[in-house]
Image (cartoon, rainbow, N blue to C red):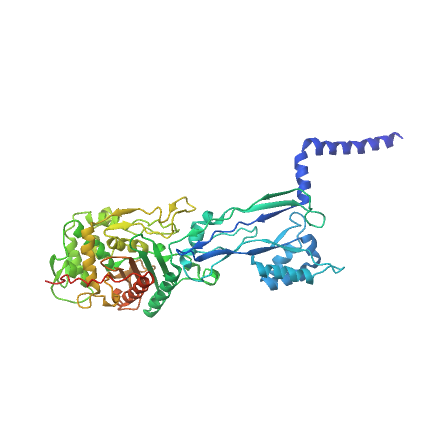
Length: 584
């Protein structure tokens, strides 16, 4: 009898201890566990903001998509057959899908099967599964469902892909990371904030109609407006591709800028990739070469050197020079790209003929440090601050690195390096009456993930050379495309006055760190020369031997400038090109 009472007392003490634990010691944690066993949490993805061109056309957009989710408590019955079905219909990995369909324990009532599936496709797959995998009593299969999951698409294939970047595929936890371009640089601005729905479910996994539920709505991301003109970008990329391929080149860049505002209307790279199918391309293409890659600009830089001389009051377009066939400087000779005896050239003639020797003789008039000061004000050696990641600042020697020999070479565009947007903005300074305006690729203002506010609304301007110096430089540049006086008649645009400059520079090989015999050829200019509206810069790297800026980049410039002027309805000014003397 006493033994029985002892046993009963022991049992009651166990129940009492358990009751104390539940009600007094840790009631909240156990209540939470009980709630979680009968609840489901669903992420409500925010719709990512669109990336738009200057006319509101979508460059990257978010469309209606679905995630397909499974309830393993239901799907495990037919897991092998269902995994086969889903892998065939959605291109999923069979083993991974099978594991998700069989999950037990934590997470056993909710598993992501596929993310960002086009809505119509997802609904069709789930509907077919519902009908195919009925239970023993013929009831529709209830193991799969769909939830809203916006899908990122790039409707224009490779158009501006170098600028846009792209989103990667969702991770196991559903996170989608931007991998390049504007998508990465402005991720927080675009992405918004996901919401969450939490509700009670019954034994079969269905929501209890009057059960507890909480809803935190998603906050959609903001649209990012760019300065890019989609149709002009398309044309620019095609012209650039044809130019690089036609010259046997390795790669190329083209920049089109509004001369007055600094807005980048087109920023093209070749080769590039299709943003809707990025995995089919080498990841070295996931960048904007116009910002990330540096090179020596060659004779386009002479525009900056000679305009600085004029602004400093040290020279004028009509100043006369005797230009020998060779110029010995220290232990090295400086030559021109063509053989000649002594020439009698004006400063305008030095630019029109693109004489290295003449440029060095003219630059001898600078005081120590004066040219470097001007180049810095033109923006060389400083990032443009467009907002895209990976931009290089280039190289502008300073201090002891700026030797006499280096200074000579910098005057005609060697021994320094630039990126293409830097150089386009520098030349545009002359088009804009001597005032450098920051280039912009964002219309208005937006904040990067690094916290920098960028865009046309934040762009600054500074005077680099006087209005008169800019105008006189324009007159000299106009002679470059003159069929009798200049070296680039193929850059002319019929009916318009054009000011421009060729460039040919030796390239530094990646392996040897030395000049490897290849070149970068280019042409930069603006039109109408006497009332500039657009600045265009074309660069081709490593074309076949014997290529020059006038013969390769010049015709591409002409096509791009002609198309841009017509597209924006810019009429010729009706004035004849100037005839400023190039010889004396």
